[in-house]
Length: 180
View 1 (cartoon, one colour):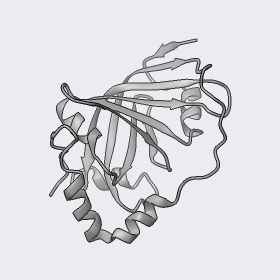
View 2 (spheres, helix red, strand yellow):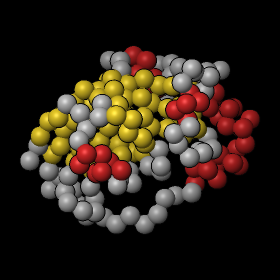
View 3 (tube, helix red, strand yellow):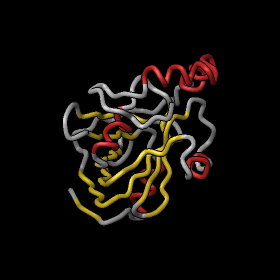
C-alpha cells in the first residue's frame, strides 16, 4: 500500500519514464486550485530529488502564477496499463522563462516543441506511492500532434500575441511572470 520516500528510487524512475501522461497541481494562497494533465516527451528526471518539465502554450498559465505566490507543487503519475500504482512528487517549484539564465540549458533537455512557454523545476521533498486499485485499465493509442500544428499555424508572432493576451494573468488575476 502507501509508502513515503525522501527521493526517487530506481523503480520510481522506471515507472515515471514509462508513463504517457502526468498531472500537475498548484494553488496560490487564495483562489482556485489548478490541476493540469501533461503529456508528450516533456518531463526529465535530473536527480533523485529534482525533475523538470517543459510546458507548451495553452489557454491559461495558472501554474506559473501560483508559483509566484507560493512554490508548492504536486506532480502525479498514475498507471493505467500495468500494475496499479500512483506516484506523487511533492515539493517546491519555480518557473523558468525564455531569457532566464538557465532557459537554454533546460530547454536543451527536450526535443523541440513549437510554442514552448515555460519550464518548471521541481525540488522534491517527498515521494509518495499508493495502490491505484480503483484506477481503470486503459490503452495508450498515440500522442496527439495538435500542439505543434497549432503553434506552427500561429507562427512566432502569433504565438507571442496569444501568450501576451491569454497567459500573462491567471484566472484569479495573478501575474504569471511571463515576459512581455
